[in-house]
Image (cartoon, rainbow, N blue to C red; front, top):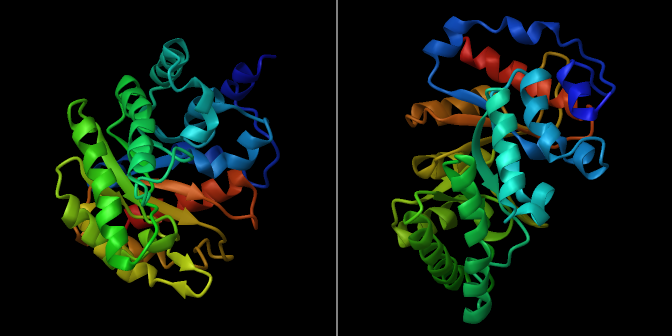
Length: 300
């Protein structure tokens, strides 16, 4: 049996969960609630890196195993296919066949958009052009980038804002948003990233608040609730990061009810992406646990 057909038929690698209840989601809750659920590809990063599944499998798997109809890609898993139109068209075909919406591409390993060296900074900007074009081909609304820089607090605001502004000007002509995630360093400081957003001041620039990525360095961790509160006014996507769940199905590091109240009270009504990154549960179990918790919140 071919691997793609293997997944389509509903068979999946080991898990302690029974998936029969996934199709029993209340349509009333989904219609009345202002947020939708998507799946971030990083949730399956171990399976992808171990070659148990590949990038194309991820699309169909999201729908057939988890009943999720919107996905967020990571460029790492199809890095060598960035300018391969035939491959991108195959991604589109699978997404269409399974009625899955492509939302965004998370982009890493393309240089630092806040590099102190101007030549390196602008090279990093240009390196992202192909992913913007790919996002357009796939029907995504955005790419997610990193705002890594060096220097003093204020110097990094200036440098990161310069790189992001230039990238946003390019993406504006194509109709794709540029989203910055709190992803380590000063980008995990909500106040700092807010200042970057205000400095760039471009309609195509926004944030992708992640519930868990608030470690600035080994000695400093930013308050996640304050951080999301600061970043959510600029958000065009949200990442529901999860690591571990207790016996009642609650995430042990993040109070999802408190966090989602912050998100929804802001007026945000886009997708909330499941991004399970833990090791206490299998990847598939972690995705289901996160989805179940979000669906409980949808029902309240």
